[in-house]
Image 1 (cartoon, rainbow, N blue to C red):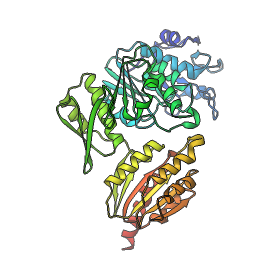
Image 2 (image 1 turned 90 degrees about the vertical axis):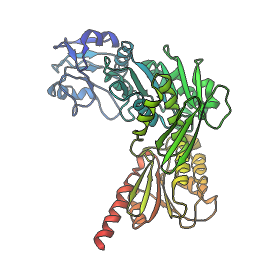
Image 3 (image 1 turned 135 degrees about the vertical axis):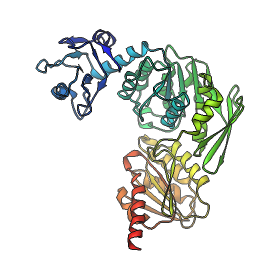
Length: 459
């Protein structure tokens, strides 16, 4: 069980205790009184939607040991650690705890693929608790410190921490907390352009993760090569590449065989196999294998651990439902991940089957949104009998891109995901599903399943 003493908490965040901590320690942290466990510290965050200070009494009633606050509430009989800003203070707690840890800290960021990479590298390093990692994609100013403060410091040899940003200045804060020994850039592409401005802006901001004191090695994928100087920050770096001629690059090759991808890496004496396909996945796997090997895991262990690893839900998985096969990759989307997923679907789908492309628009692309939606649309060559169903603000531009390839197939435009249900009723063939998270495109699976059940009943 994790334990944090009152004095170290105060010192880490430069706070002031309002009413002394009754017990010897705090046993974890929580932002939500509904899930708070007795003995934890309640972190009272202020957001545009709510003020956590309004829930201090509820936290006390649930058995909180203390609260981290930005304003004192003496009427609530609960030890309170007062700081100027509770979110910044929470990050400072994590930074202090990180400084006391001996685990090798790996910071992971990128425009896409970072959650998959984080899960994969953690698996290759042996998994929890020895290889701690971010839960899901809790990669922001709340998720990063929460990940570090949940780390079992005595058992942990490695920590793989994901850092995600959408605005300028955010990475500087996250990098200060993580202070990584190793940094991995999975990709640089057109994501969060609304807040980061341009590809150069994306690279410059993400590159701040490799600007801290402890960093000794940087890995980056082939897509990062044009921005290598912005990313590496003067540290030693390695580009993991398949299709470019870069001096000193760690080279790999991949081939797709059925539902599997086989990967060979220069300098490793065996071929590795992973379930799934696509150049993005192959790059992530190769980079994770190289990083894990450099961190001391032997090839035989890597091979065995990789064999049992699977990508997370809605991150490029095939589902067979009746006479339909669904390629579900709709956890989120940006142009780079969309193009990679489309390439994978095209390679692995049945060359004679009818196809449906359920395409949601991609968010936070700023002034370049229409251009990128047209580009994604134009990358799809529809066959006679194919159908594209579009949803979201970028649908019109995506439609223009689709039409630029000729008039094969047909295009439908829907305003809400429920409208796709009758379109898919009785469909037989392959279905591609991808778009930004807000569209709820995963409902396509249940709609097809309902259609199959209806057909069974009617028979």
